[in-house]
Amino acid sequence: MTIAPIPVDEAVPGPRPDSIASDDLLALYREMMRVRAFEDEVIDAFARGLIPGSTHPCIGAEGIKAGALAALRPDDLVFATYRGHGEVLIKGVDPVGMMAELMGRATGVCKGKGGSMHLSEPSVGLISTNAIVAGHIPMAGGAALSCQFRKTGQVVLCFFGDGASCEGEFFEAMNMAMLWKVPLVFICENNGVAISVPTSKSQATPDIADRARGFGMPAVIVDGNDVLAVRDAVADGVTRARTGGGPSFVECKTVRWERHSAFSAGGSDPVEQRLAWQRVDPIPRFRKSLRAWDIATDAQLDALDEEIRETMRAVREEAERAPLPAPESVYDDVYAP
Image (tube, rainbow, N blue to C red; front, side, top):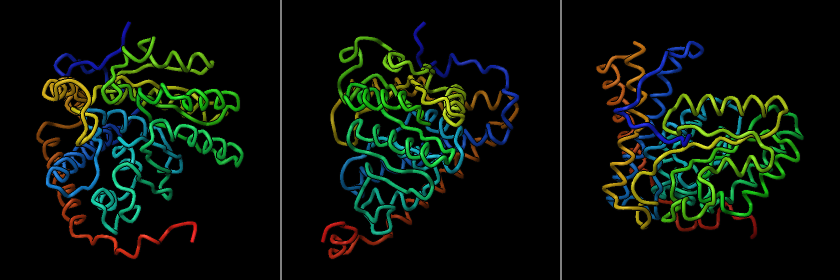
């Protein structure tokens, strides 16, 4: 049976998961909303000319970000793609520093020199986002090997899209990860299109997880817009990795929001594409479950939504007030003289 995101109108809340506290369930919703509100501010700021370069919103895939990172310890490590604002925010990077970085300001997490696609804050375990398709996958493997050598007990999550699974380093990293049984969980965010190429035209099988199985790697496929399904699948992989069982693969089926990036082409008609993700939006879908389980009322969730949006508006305002890097700072942080 093909797995695909379920439309919000058709989603039926199952029984409340007894193993997850009410506060933790509400926290999943809060994290998804934080990412959505941040991305909404990013989109508006870009439209107003405040963000140099492009941006790659992860709207519609917040369930993958929140669900996967809920399975980690604070000291675990994360690598993400250029569509990685959600991972960065949830991993604990200061949102003001993030927004300032997107705006090229001196107070950004990379001093305004990395921008939207090159975010890094190792102090919280966010090693990097990466603008090169699949470029970070072998890096994640190396970090996992380091954790194994140093016996830290840490696990590495590596997020990437369906397009990255056509690159050679994807296969090389999976092979070596299995050979050396490193503590790594591969998370494929399969939104069905790599820039403008549908997976049906680039891959011989509909499921990218088949490629992982070819290396003998445990692999599962989940509805990426079901935050609890993602959480459970990634948690299993994290447990396996932390206990010496080696890597695993989680393919999350989702839908991309509009175009590839803020100013590039790619994909179908933007209006139709927006409607497609709205039909399977993970946030109202999980909201239905929270109401059904008597964890929160609509009024309480509305209040939480507005509180989060107000916070992100304040984040953006503070970032806008930050100074631009001084011209002479171009020579700072350069390894060679």
